[in-house]
Length: 212
Ligand code: SF4
Image: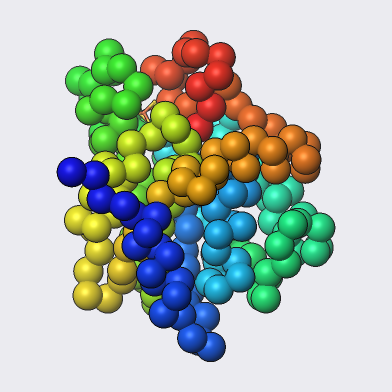
């Protein structure tokens, strides 16, 4: 039976008092981040964490990072639909494509959504967990659940498996509450580049509508 992780997020939100939790939010791309930020920046102090060894093309990796930087500027300049109580921060992990290729070894022919993607999720969420743990964040999470092409149940299961007593996974399913459509609307509104493939070389070419 599927677990309603969106409801779990709402329950956590309802318990937040005056102390704003520190959240390290793994960000796959700017379009996905838009809708997530609308659900978070009123209550959480958000640091975006761009750690995506799956985007093995340095040009594409840099292009998506540039769009995330642009979104952060939009938010912190007060031009976003919701103003953050404190500025959104951004951290970037070095691109190390070999780590992705090692994780995906033997799974190159898997369809999108299969075993290769599970390994890819584990790689990136573990990176986010490690960074969050090292810096004393309260929670870590990811924007990946916005996409209808990403298995939110699996992402949350992986996130929960990575949490420890010292760093908690923030359960979420950002595609709920019209999240994906909101991400499309906001990306168009702010002129953000929406890629037409997931990220790794094995996801090219794919359905033209298959954005992250
Ligand atoms: S299709 Fe996307 S989620 Fe799957 S392995 Fe490639 S980059 Fe990762």
